[in-house]
Length: 165
Image (cartoon, one colour):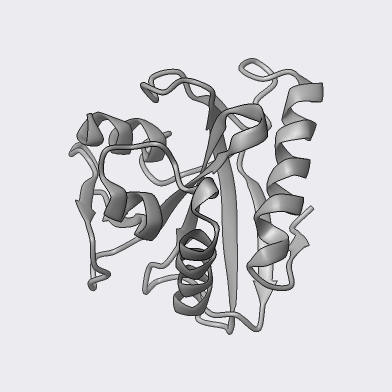
């Protein structure tokens, strides 16, 4: 179950997230933001996704891809790492949202991070993801509600942020 969950939650289109809602954390580097996420989940276990792998539930994972090959997933960051994926469970609406942070060495190395909200599922099997901001998969009212809940319940606890738009 864990393997299919990981591939479905973080393999929207091999590293590009054209519909993602992007949030900028200024003066917080990638490693610090990932630490903030882990600490938030440790202190607020209700936001950990309901998966069999409890380490992933709290820590998330890193991954990279090569054209024509499936994503390579690791628990630790290495020179090939491109993204860090972390999911959050939103208890009052029984939904899990998926986020990624670009951690590649090739990105602009300033002291800020961009966290991208990429998808939502209401399924415990993680098989039916809806892409955030894609009006063919999610209606505008639901999309706005998911983003607002994520911003108020999760992002506000991770540090000072602003929407990229």
